[in-house]
Length: 192
Image 1 (spheres, rainbow, N blue to C red):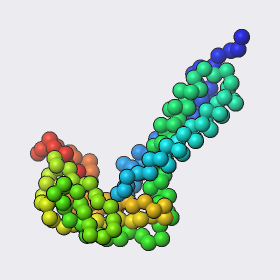
Image 2 (image 1 turned 180 degrees about the horizontal axis):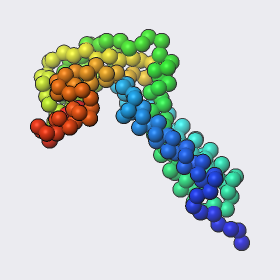
Image 3 (image 1 turned 90 degrees about the vertical axis):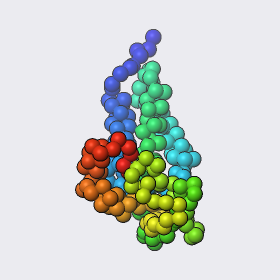
Image 4 (image 1 turned 90 degrees about the horizontal axis):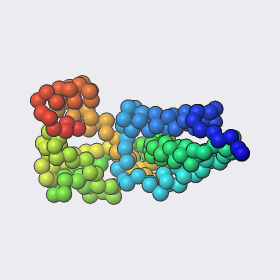
């Protein structure tokens, strides 16, 4: 009878480290240091394919290193989630790195469905948050300029730096945390 392996082993630890690195990169790119986000729907098919392929590699790695392991499929599933988060974030970075045009300014108008629409061939932007005091200042027909790029992968991204700067001025605060703290004292709504 084969000895069944469960729990932390060197191979499982490597998989766990890769998972946490993927999650850390996602959190960093989306919430900490990144300022550009998908203006188009994310390339979900690409993200799924990449995450499934990489999780299959992890699954095969564990089968090779520890053939008697009983929870290999569970590790593969957890790795798949980490790889999906990583792929979501890395596509944004690769799109920026392969861009040859840089950020461009585009004029938008707030439409009746509360999306920002442009006369140019750029994606509509769904940025309006009805509970946000900042976004409530805009009325249908108002115009605003947003910075977008169509990177080397052909994906449209919006740079939110100027929007965040305007929000800081609007709320009279110096950063996301101070805006949230100051805003929560005066209103329990959403501020960004």
